[in-house]
Amino acid sequence: MWRMPERCPTCGGLLQIRELSCTECKTEIRGHFHPCDFCRLSEDEATFLRVFVLLRGSLKAVGKELGISYPTVSSKLEEIIAALSRETEKRAEVEDTSARGDILDRIASGDLSAEEGLRLLKTTKAKKEG
Image: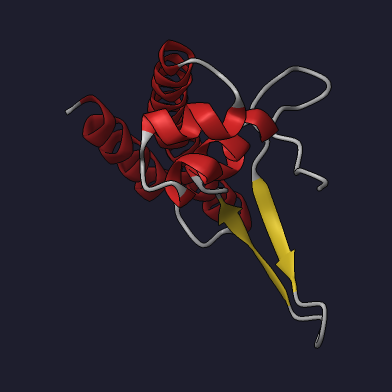
């Protein structure tokens, strides 16, 4: 299965989904969209998680199914938990950057005055720090 790239090949930054289109009617939707945390797991992590859920969380059964020891199963689960935690933090960072980008776009298009944009940017920063 082909997976969407998650990192910029130039700088290594997180990629953001900016456009969606319908395969039937060709409607296009533009904005700032984020893949779910699970979409950012590696293929191995996604396979492990799929097996884990299908076997109702039985670490022993997962080990048997994947042919790995119980400690390895436990370790892999901890790695996935850590990866999901990091993705939640990264998503919050990207959402903050997107909000600032939207404000700057609205200023550039004339929808917002510079003063109002500055006020919104300060509010966004205060929420992040608070």
